[in-house]
Structures are given as C-alpha cells and as structure tokens.
Image (cartoon, rainbow, N blue to C red; front, side, top):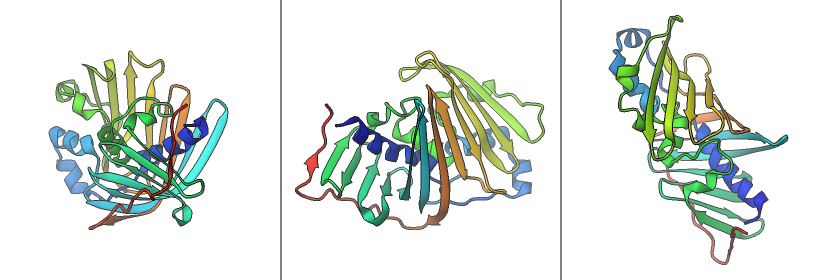
Amino acid sequence: MRKSKILGVGLGLLLMAACKTGLVKESNSTERLMSRDAEIERLANGMNEAPGYRGRIRATLIQNSSKKEVTLSVRAITDEGLLFSAPLGMAKLLVTPEQVAFYNKLDRTYFEGAMSQLDSLLPVSFNFEQLQRLLYGGMVFSEDLKDLKQNLRRRPAKNTAHYSSTFSSDQFGEVSYAVTAQLNPLRILRQELVSERYNDTVVVLYAYEKDEAVPSTIELTGAGKKLLLALSDFEAQKAVNLPFQIPSGYRLLRKK
C-alpha cells in the first residue's frame, strides 16, 4: 500500500476517536450525591447511554510540519462498529473490534486488515475498546487500572477530581496514568499516559459545549503528532445500521 493511501485509511480510522455519542446530561443533585466509586464507574467508559448515533466529524492530523484534514459522516453501534463515509459515498471505512475495512470508488480499490493499521499515525497503539472509550469521553486505559480506587486523590481545585495509577501491562510496559475530571457536570477534561515504550507523554484534552457530558472537540498529542477532532450534528439513535459491502471487482491495496 502506498504511504498516501495508508494515511487516508488511517486518518479515517482516527476519526472514530472523536465520535460523539448520546447527548446525556446529569442533574446537579445527582452529581453532588455521586460516590467516588460511582464517579469512577461512570467515567471509565464515558457518558454514552445510547445504543448508537449519527453525525459528522472533521479530523485534522498535524505531523512533520504537514497538515491533512478530512470531513466525514459517521454512524456507530456501541461495542460493535463505526462506519465513516466520504461525501456521496465515494469511500467508506468500517471499524470493528476485529478489523478495519475500506473501499474507494474513485480508483476501485479496497483494503481489509487489523487495528494495527493505526500504529503509524496515533501516538500509541490503541485497540478498539480503548478507541471507543476515547471517543466516548471515557478513561481510555481503565481495563489496566485494577488499583485505581486505592490511588485516587482529590485535587484542591474547585469542582475537579484527579485519578491516577501506575501499572504494568504487555501493551505499554510500566505506565503512569492520570485523569482529571470535572465533577459537576461529570466529565473528563484531561488524560495523560506516560509509558516506558514511548518517547513522549501522550495527552488527551476534551472541550465541551455548555453542560454536555460528551466532548465537542478532542485533541490527542504525543510522539510528534497532533490529532484534532471536531464533532457536529450528532444525534443519539435507538436503531442504527452500518451498511458496508466491498463491491466486487475492486483491487486489493497491498503494503509495499
């Protein structure tokens, strides 16, 4: 696969990190009564309570003094998959827990492969579940934080809490992980990962509109890369399908 085509596929994959799901708000009284354990549980996977959603997303990737931008429509079914479509359906990208698949009507090509296709673009190698938590505004690496509750400490800043832990995993080696959250309304403001296997700190910053519990923009930086994701026109859906089928007669893209 040519480098430019890999970038096109990868950039589409990166868009899933920004998918804004069910527009869930919490009342002030609920937030005040929430316990530490309940806060962590809600923050672990994000505020999404919808089975699916539809909307648009604009992604800007900045690396090595270059800048690439794309806007796509997106559909998602929670825990099952995400579908990104270029205008007029000229290209589509499907991301599932098992693999990614892509086709382009302009040059009649397609690609199928593993989630590792993200590795050349993202600051760290994410699996599907981690990417989903990222886009839902959840704790990206929560499955590794078995001792998070014991390491939790409150910051003195008003209306914020700080969660941190250190752990060892096959994926990242020795890790220091920290999350800063706003308590009312409950939502994550910042995540930071320091891993012995990466040369840079990976930082995720979220911005929100008013009291929405899911992000309107996400900024992911690390390893000399910056990914900016902006969301618009997102709506929670009770029923969503992911129409995707690679047309017959298309040519397989291969790495060179």
